[in-house]
Length: 141
Image (tube, rainbow, N blue to C red; front, side, top):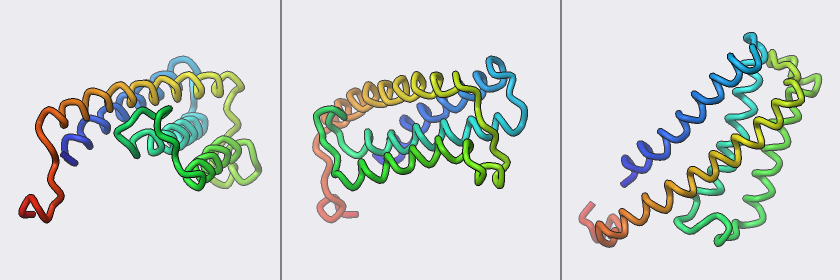
């Protein structure tokens, strides 16, 4: 199951990486610094929020995450967005992205989380049809 999970959800992650590459190169005409900055911010923001989404089989809006997870996820998102805008970001070679990059970030984040929720629905529905998953001790592993 872990292998299938990684292949399915990893493919979704790769799809959004490719979309981001295209948007940065074609729509933003990004040079090296903006490309690295944009990919860093988009990757960190989306991956942190995807962790919140895939932590459960249930729909994201039906499963309230622990306050600590929500707090840490928000801190990570704030750092990811603020770092390129701060003087510290220059140490990493980051540049301030154009304002409409953040509009793109919002759209791509909602699209990615939505796709992951849809994939979860079909992925776990298929798993439930395959039969119950036994704990490793009972499965002889």
